[in-house]
Length: 233
Image 1 (tube, rainbow, N blue to C red):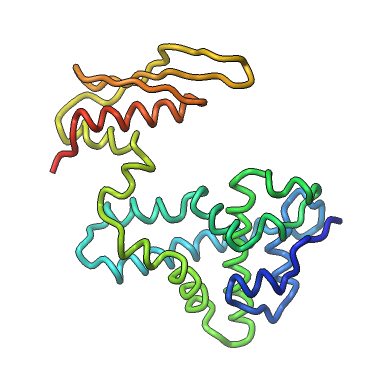
Image 2: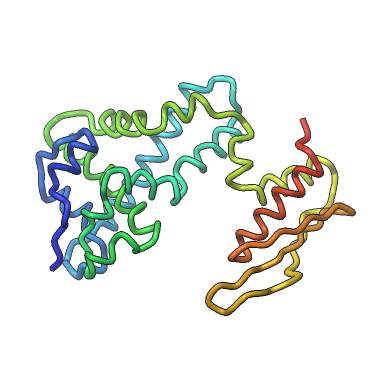
């Protein structure tokens, strides 16, 4: 069984919480590939719900002028895998996560570390509850420390840069135009480093862009077409 390379105390210092039950911390840091009888998937399930609750509570408290749709979109930005992966890296979870191949942990991809971050939040909740403290308040404190500034500084168009395809679809609908249609117009480069060129069409309007994947090229094409269409008020 692999062991974490980063001392738990360092992780706790970065997190700002000291565990009473070390087993909860170790469970949160155990990936399914470790082959132990207890991995972090159950904690991840709980942590996902706690994280969504905490972010929703902060949005409801901090943005009284926003409607449900706007709050939902910003919450989606904050709890998406890439954002949680970044938080996990800041905490050093790439060094602390227990897996079958600990040396490969830093390159495992975003989801395992994002899942570990959610599991860690659940472990904090259960640990605090276990000593008679308010676990929800403890998790809220951690989430607030991470996201409060972003929530206060956000504006309703914040997600456009991160999710241009969805924004283009909504913009087309508001303008009474057909739904966007994406088409691959070119594939270049070697097999190990392809370059996709994707075109997007909305009614009589179109734009195209290239990227290392179809998804990236589609997103850039959507962003360019948004610049042509503008954002309806």
